[in-house]
Picture (cartoon, rainbow, N blue to C red):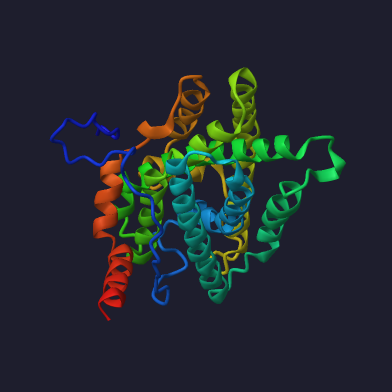
Length: 315
């Protein structure tokens, strides 16, 4: 399946990243009927994906904070519009994933011992001031953090594209509400796939230092994400009250879920890095904007949110 957007012809109705508006959708989800193992009989795949809920509430709040710091540096009005739309989407993602953490806690899986470390990483280690009195200027520290966000967004775009195409999750009869959350979020990640990159390029200086900092951002981001994901999956499986210690997170179990189409392949994730390292790279061809927009037009949560806005406008 070709996951890239074709070059639009003069009569094409394919959405163009250059003209497609980025706007938040005020969605909501009802978690009352979602089981702890929302992929039936697949606790490893369930919890590997559940790591998203551990990382994203704090991570996406941090995205918004860093972008707020950088807003005064944006001189391009079109980029400014996209950045504000990105911030609105990321704020909504953070809120909705935090509700999943509440749902996990109601089912006996307390995630706070893990998420406190994630909170510390974003709020302290990557906060407004460099940690430990590092001799880094405020401007350079901001640019470094923007480079991290651009690198993270490379992976979220790849994951977003994967979940939109992940037929294995449907074959496994995954919970419909959780699948809609993941695909709504994934579609918006594809929708705004280039904004963090463009924000960094616009505010990160010029020439070789800007490119070198972008590469450094990926060099920092990729191993940290791997460690956080493995640690998070192991934590969730170890503390799952329904498993009662009968299962451990292992590479064998993970790869079994990959073969079933329940998780993205290592090759798919790893290939995102060399693409990003190309000096001429731009993320506008990650995934398919058309597929993302088509899903957002059918997503139950997104349709309900659009209907609520329409009713409010009429009343």
